Image 1 (tube, one colour):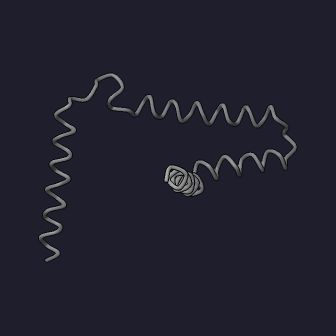
Image 2: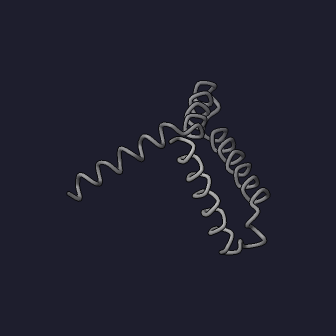
Image 3: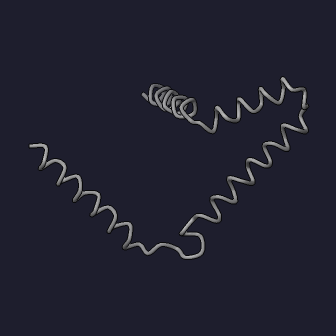
Length: 93
C-alpha cells in the first residue's frame, strides 16, 4: 500500500513539474546556452540572475514580510470562500 502511494505521489510531482513554466524556461535556457557554447560560467550566471530576480520579487512584493498576518484573516478569507461557494451552488439548482 505504501509503495503504491509513493508511486502516485511521484507521478503527481512529475505532472506538476512538467506543467511548470519555470521548469521549461530553465530547460530552454540551459539548452540555448549549451548550443551557444557559453559554457558553464554563463549558465551559472544566468541561473544566479534568475534566482536573484525571483528572490527580490518574493521579498519586495510579499505583504507578510514585515507585518505578519493576523490569524483571524485566514478565517475571514475561508468564510468568504465558503459563502461564495454556497452562493454558486444555490444558483446552480
